[in-house]
Image 1 (cartoon, rainbow, N blue to C red):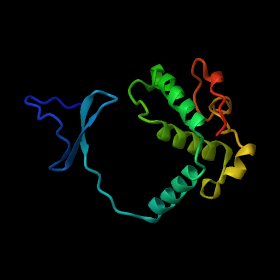
Image 2: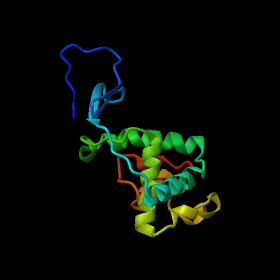
Image 3: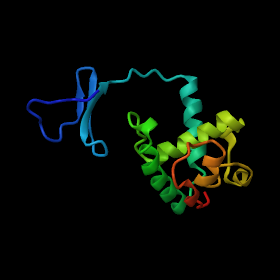
Image 4: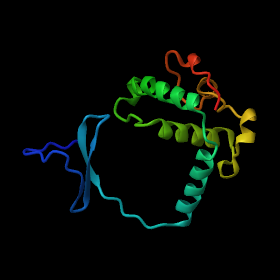
Length: 145
């Protein structure tokens, strides 16, 4: 939900009643959303374990830069105009979870040694494998993970 303030207190972020207010520099506007009600369950712990395994792979700096460059093109797609992805790590996570759903890869036990057999070696290979949508010029993103 977009927020319009009549008298904006510059730099205001935080909680107000049951809402959270923060400024998104990438979108250039304040965002207000309902504060989440969180009750930890087993599925939360499993998700956390998988996310730790995904990021324990530690992608290379060149791969991260390819993801950042791809992200600009990805957010420029007409289908992504209303729901842009904010950072490279969200795109990386999305790519890995798509690999889990499409290729049935067990992400809880994934290691760097498993990657040569998987389509997430580079951003270009991930696009060709259907893990990420095609954008113009995706072939240039060849840096290895």
